[in-house]
Image 1 (cartoon, one colour):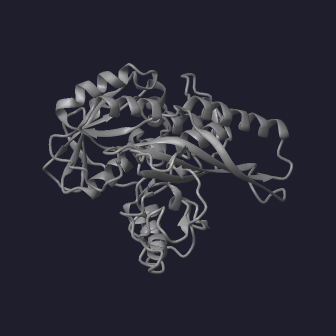
Image 2: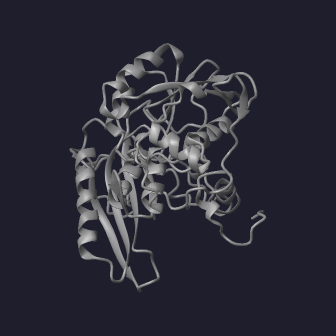
Length: 396
């Protein structure tokens, strides 16, 4: 691994340039495969075994479809004798009778995320709600319908039971609202002082309808396409920072933490020109747009006056020297879509309570390929570079 650092820094987890260097220089180097190399919010897996090729598997297993004459292979990897007849299994886990037509869903999305936020309770949510929303949203922006979650807890000895119950209740409520089930999990307790209160990992599985895989490196993005967001930026990061540091701002600062799968489904149901989606969590909108610019052979221009930023977030950013474009969000989605359908998408999102402040904030352009440029309110331009430091550690 080529890196200037010989030890892990906080900035290795900020979602920006240094974290991506760690991923490409270490994790992809050793774990690399065609699925992982897509580097989407979710891995897309073909359950029919026809698209995904595992070059390192034995030849008698590689590319074998489910239901062959040899011992049948279940999605979990367990074999059974060919003479044993069981109902065939849908990607979502529903059984169907042998001979029935295959499901329209041949792919699933699989994602995982860990949550170490400090403080664990904050205005607008807690670590439990965040864990559910974060994983549901990673599935949703990949074009998937979220279905199942796992939940694993690492808990410090002495952690208050009432706080744990509050967190678990919050997770259950958010999962119910999102229409997903928490179906498996794990619990570990470590000695006092060996963990900061509680950490949570959630993994998620969702199914993808044909044509809705949003993880492709370049889904026909072209100059003239517009960039949209569903609301005000930086609310989560500033709410958590305010709670952590007890700044006691008079303006209300509340996290935007929310599950977006309903909003995203409405957008996809009413538009055929959505080409890219990503939730701008760590590193904010600027980091997502830099990732996108690196995938395509075009540039991106953002209009500063079009950015939806609340008064409280703006005031706190100005006081602390932060840029709202780099602040974490937990209830926002960045969408790239064709210009001809952009107003329709805005109208659809504004009908949803999570999209009331939706806005078109920029465009894909033919100039300055690979770069993100902000057109300022005063008429100037400046490059929005990838995040390098970590102004807000442990924000999710």
